[in-house]
Length: 305
Ligand code: GLN
Image: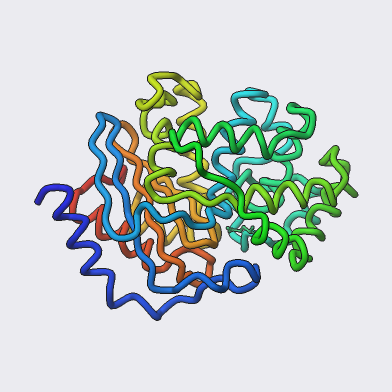
């Protein structure tokens, strides 16, 4: 089967999974998204690009934004970033507070919310507070779509209701782990998470992760090979929160999810895959998206395991 047929087959086979998950409602701005959306893109490092369903429709990338912010932090600070954040899976929810208190405010990894706040704080310190604009410009260039933007309504609705993230930011500050004031950091974090991109935009922008750090679109390195391998290792062990083990079991690829229903997965040296479907499982990962990636790995044998 060739790639367009594989994608059509996946779109057909995931249909029975609709209605089994729940659209994120704890961020008021996300509840209105129709639950039955589905889009998927496969972008090969050698140029092939295949999409199915609503793959050009922008959605809220939420925690997927933790990836480009980490890419920026690593290219700005190199190894220095690991003084602020760990590299171990957390085994707990993405917004858990308990572990952070036990471990004296050092977040387990850059993909739990506490870790993403610390990474953002570092990028803010390196950009005179302009991290949101820097990330937007970075992704516009990498995706070659200069129309992508933040959804300020979604950001404002999360800022109003994100009491748990506010607690995390305050705990980080109490432990002396961040330099920004918690309110400033939270505002920038909610904006970062509210970015809207399509499956196609994300696949193009994050393709360097499948290509040793080089963007095939720009013919330019945005990360070193070593940095790229490290990010992929973190995605493999921490990218799907407390269901990272079952995701590895089912799919076997480094991946990063967001509560907007997007998942980015990387097949090193082959392709970047992006799937979007808003209904989530209990860990906050796209239920239909995970099923689609499992089918993809099974049908193409493009899995690292
Ligand atoms: N903005 C969301 C939050 O902090 C992102 C979480 C996610 O996508 N997993 O709760």
